[in-house]
Image (cartoon, rainbow, N blue to C red; front, side):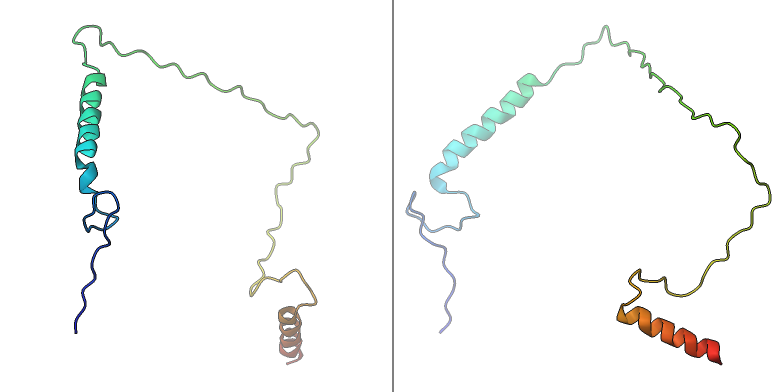
Length: 112
């Protein structure tokens, strides 16, 4: 026996429909509200005037430039570039299992 799923009976209009469907009892009210919203939007929409539509110039105020002045700053021309370390970065916790294993394997590699 095949049973089909039926929509529950509405307590307002006493008909069967799903909650996602609009209730037929409120159809007239919903249509009236929609019509009012459409007319309200049409009334409040401003009509562009033909005369006096000159664009206003936009002025942008620049932010004040503040520089920190330091005196007697040593300048180094030939600074050595630090060598980049390869491999996994250290975890920060020297006692973690991953860090201990990494150090152990590093010692084995260095011993060869």
